[in-house]
Image 1 (cartoon, rainbow, N blue to C red):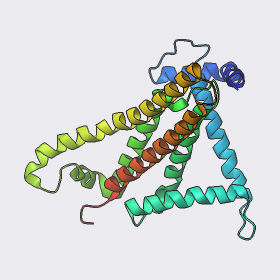
Image 2 (image 1 turned 90 degrees about the vertical axis):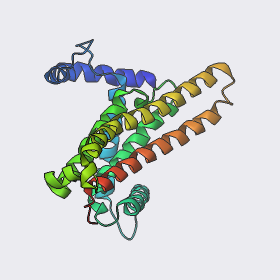
Image 3 (image 1 turned 135 degrees about the vertical axis):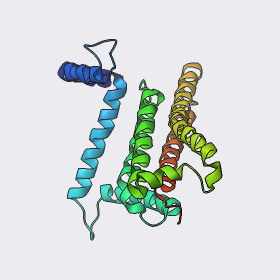
Length: 246
């Protein structure tokens, strides 16, 4: 399996190394290996992305009320789960956020589960992946907060309900929101890195039958961390888009 990942990474670098390196240069990032800016972590992310696009296209082209297929059943289960969680946290108006929340949950879960394959490092055990997801989440909920409340209303959101402590609350709230980036990143990265390391250690020390238990543990951690990331994003969205008078 690792050989196939290495082969795909080599192909991607052969085809896209120049534009990727140029894009990185535009944002001030300089790759240590300009001829190979794409690593296995990015290759795995692209595989997950491609697989999700193909899956959603398959479900979309085979939608049926009378005879839903297995893919549609799976999509409906995920949709109903995310819908129930979002409705409990956000209440009315949660529907417009479902596509992003669903994609976050499934994307992170699939990335987390790559660690179950022999020789494959979990993409989310690389800190750059959780950081990217955290930055996207931060930008997404703040943007929706601005849209829902307007610039003035959203700034007031950081000042608290009591005007005379606003000068104290405002910097505290700003720091608290910025800390969410680190919190989301470290939580996902640390748990998946530790799970990868634990599985690797036990596979190298004891007979293969015993570490299989830790593969089940890894899957449990993968599922929980994907859920927590999605749930925290939902909570942040609810806080950002709820008007104070409500």
